Image: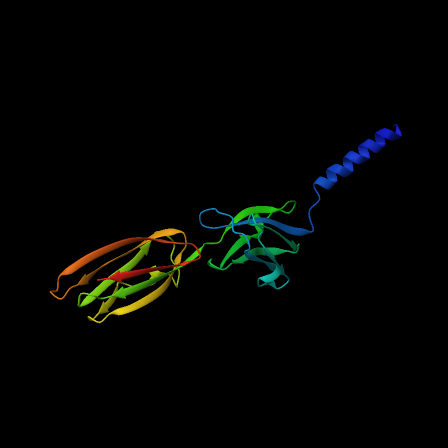
Length: 215
């Protein structure tokens, strides 16, 4: 067989073998987005691996910390060992710190894992309450369509109640940002009549909305 044919065959064989070569690390091409799909730049992303060893499944171990670029993208490489799962903790001011876990079975061995990770924007709501009519009590609830959280306004159990004629106070709570929400309730006037009220509001992402409820 001519030498040049052997060289061609050898080159093709090396190329084909190289295409199937596994990487010596797990690679993740991730995009950080908010709940509306907008890219989040400047977010800190910590990459963890939960290894598997002779004693079984270990604890999550931090392997890399990166920051998302202007398009919300990060690239994380983690040395390849037997793994059970991966976790990515994401944080940025004006957002809820969150963690995303990925099963090792869902991570390719010959190419990067690609996907979006959601980092919800956060808002704060300051409700000022003023009794200007000598009403005897006020009842109110805060509602929204967004998921709730331990510190969120919607998590106050039952109705909020204030009694007495000398009410001038305020409450501060947390909301998911960039969403509509409402304050509904009623106050009982001096003649013991019930007077309902409803206010539709908007929570700006990463900021505080101040609203005064006067009754």
